[in-house]
Length: 150
Ligand SMILES: [Cu+2]
Image (tube, helix red, strand yellow):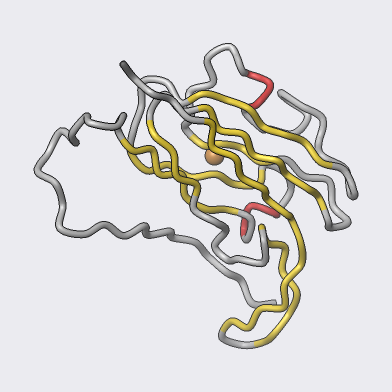
């Protein structure tokens, strides 16, 4: 029997002072992490992410590449599948990982916020199901991004 879990995450979208190359300035982050937190789940799990908007911009989070089967409203593009989450408001994304595994990513789906509001989603196979390749000795999540100095 397959045991599926609920995976609860809380994403507090907030400012963080960050130094990169040329200057220190506040950037919009999730939980003051840049890149944002890595979300881990197994195929078949239900993912519940409470996004709390603590910045002054409207925003939404898109789960890039996640199949939204009968949960289209959880996909995330602002003004397309949902109204943006307004400052001071929160929204719970609720979707089930079905028929896919591997590493994807999530990102803000509005304006320029995706430049700093993004992170990885690691979908592991169901418990007891091996990878379709020899088990790696080690795994690391790599996130590529750009950061503009202005
Ligand atoms: Cu995307």
